[in-house]
Image (cartoon, rainbow, N blue to C red; front, side):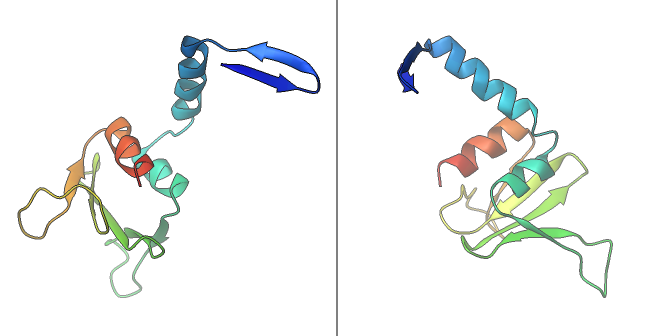
Length: 103
């Protein structure tokens, strides 16, 4: 890929572009960071502060942490396992990132 900046042409290989994407992704330190990256807001209900969840009202998405190392998400065009109450559990931030970037 060639990029021209201020009259200077720079050529980046596919590997360099992928490495840059990986470096950016490493900055997303947790599943919560991935949610925030995609416009989710943290909600802590006053009546039950231990029941934290995340919402992206613009997209109609809802997410909750599962077992301290996963995130269950539902809404819009997100992946759905077909069982009640719908949605999908993401255990890896890479999987979560890939799902959200599609939409």
